[in-house]
Image 1 (tube, rainbow over the protein chains, first blue to last red):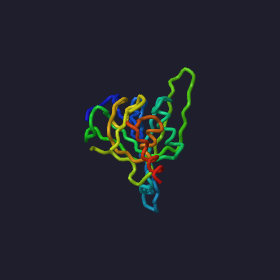
Image 2 (image 1 turned 60 degrees about the horizontal axis):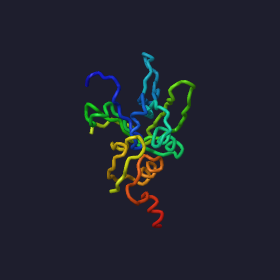
Image 3 (image 1 turned 60 degrees about the vertical axis):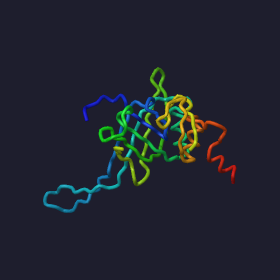
Image 4 (image 1 turned 90 degrees about the vertical axis):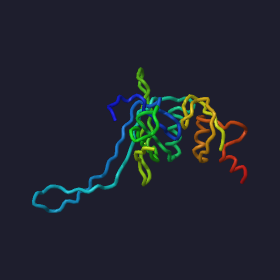
Length: 140
Length: 56
């Protein structure tokens, strides 16, 4: 796949297409690094992978219209709702090997919009994978 | 299958604002989408969840 400039990304939350209200997506998959070191001649630590945490953080534009950012996101946080998120690089192309889609069941454990005088209203929202399937990349 | 119309300015499930489409959603997803105004049911039918509670 060639290099790209991020312009056509697709981001869907709870089946609503919030692509036009999002301007940055950051995925973080992290395993706890568990130290299982014993005595050794080299003294180098030995590790195993521990529990895995997967998050997707999106910078959204604050928008308070019908079906827009706040209307979609806040009820998910307020009601502790599990929802599906989907992100792929090119919304004009179908999901494929060269345009994989990240999907999974997520919850919002925090929600914090805000504003600064004279600035564009944006805020970050972090979706956390909440079941054993986790977030994964799909090609179909 | 239920017939819906995308309301507001945000595309829903691949359908553009104003577009009518048929789909089958689970009750909770449908209720959330109706509640926030993302979609509306075309015709007189209320949400499936409300129908179920009325039947009980």
